[in-house]
Amino acid sequence: MTKTSNDVTSDDEQNPRSLARIALSTFAANKLAVASLAVLVLIVLFCFVGPMIHQTDQVSTNLVLENQPPSAAYVLGTSPTGKDELGRLMLGGQSTIELGFAVGLLATTFGLIWGTVSGFVGGIVDSVMMRVVDAFLSIPFLFFIILLAAIVRPSLWLIIIVISAVSWLSTARLVRGETLSLRTRDYVSAATGFGSPRGRLIARHIVPNVLGVVVVNGTLKVADAILTFAALGYLGLSIPPPATNWGEILAGGVNNIFDGYWWQIWPAAILIVLTVLTVNVLGDALRDVVEARLNQR
Image: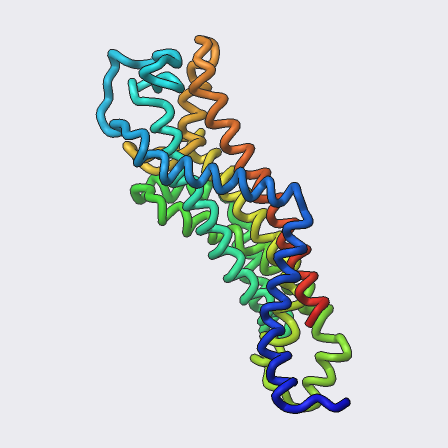
């Protein structure tokens, strides 16, 4: 029995829905990924919705209340400057999460574009673009951020741009290597022979086939950015007060580590580790989802 044009149109309309169902079922089958997503959602709610429920003063310094242990009034005690530690964790989580996902998005997107163009075009263009990557990789990141902090006042967006400026390099190299392999495949050669423009070849045949690798790499960028931000906070190179982040909170607690102020160390450390782990697990799950969708195309 031959399909009519209406049948074909109906199948085409249902195809995106079927792909969405395949992606959802693939993700749901990964119980660890579902649990990680739930934990990450709880962390986001804790940081962004929590301050609306648990309202605290994170601007004023009250040395009378410094280093108070957990109590009914202060569930997680107070900081070395007398601020409510629970509210401080919420405030620090906002900047940490915003920076992590912003860096992941910017670095992955720019690295994907740079690596794809470099690998697909090849020749002198590839050589020049990769030398630019090598030049950036030769700059020590810590020296760069210290120099920048000495010149201008650090801000959240400045730190996002700086971390993104060094994070996209490895993504570009990875995507370039995948693109060099994909452009020699038979289906790409056939499409080239039929006169498909380069833009369509990249968008239709190259980018979809590197998405699995890029998604995992992008989630690693999020985790790396969170850890880098924490390290900068620990070194005192973070955003100026009253803003804070989990690394800066952790650094303040480490200064009092021998005084037994555990509430200034463990909550921030646990939140950093949980966020990084959940993002990495979700990255592996999203790779499986992307590959499942590609297999059905």
